[in-house]
Length: 60
Image (cartoon, rainbow, N blue to C red):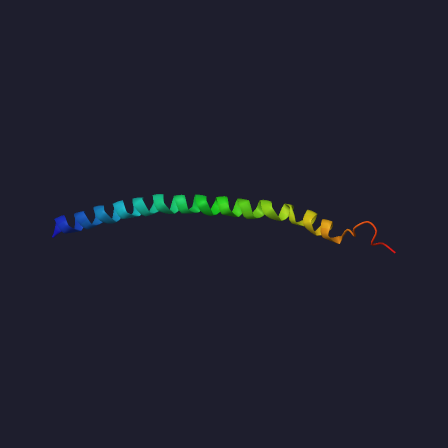
């Protein structure tokens, strides 16, 4: 019975270790995606500004 308990504790410890490594990779990927998303809106105001400018010859 004690052997089973030790085995289960060892398995749980190993599973926690593996999950921690997997989650670390997932969190790094999320951080990368968030950084990409944060960088993109900086370009958006330029696009809006260009759309508001009237082409030459259209003015009255």
